[in-house]
Image (cartoon, rainbow, N blue to C red; front, side, top):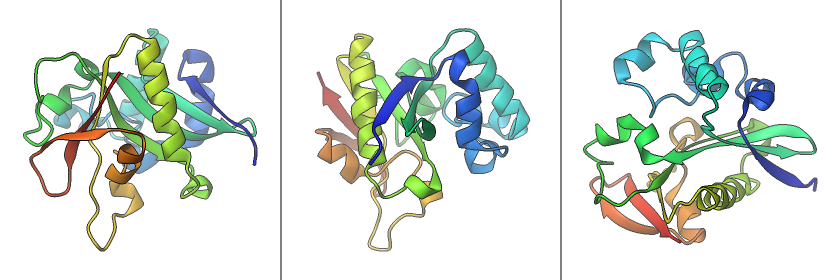
Length: 187
């Protein structure tokens, strides 16, 4: 197996991000802006508008997450940043703040189709935790789905699966929905 490496998404890696997300921008023109934009702005910008928003963010020096590479090819993505970068979380009844502690949030994954079910999400979680801690994070949150007996379609597991976060040492701290909880890892 080729070695996996992880790099922050910076302007010089934008082309790799586009290669991974494809011309449609991953799931339905999202470009990983679901948690960053008001829903009306997100919906109006599906596709090119959302891509331009994220590209400008990256061009302004904001690191919205990490790219995973295997054999030099971009194969995965994890959005990780301070919770305040994701205003849609605070508009969610289910994912509302647990307390006033400053946290970093892992909100999204995208894995190349041929790389799914190969442990990449777990590696992305580990890399995101390492990155956030390197930026001073003491608490890292995630908002994964808890699939039922029938499982969860890949397109709806973009926040990750609860089992992957439990394996990484995260603990459930709030559950306001049968399918989704707030998980934390404290440094």
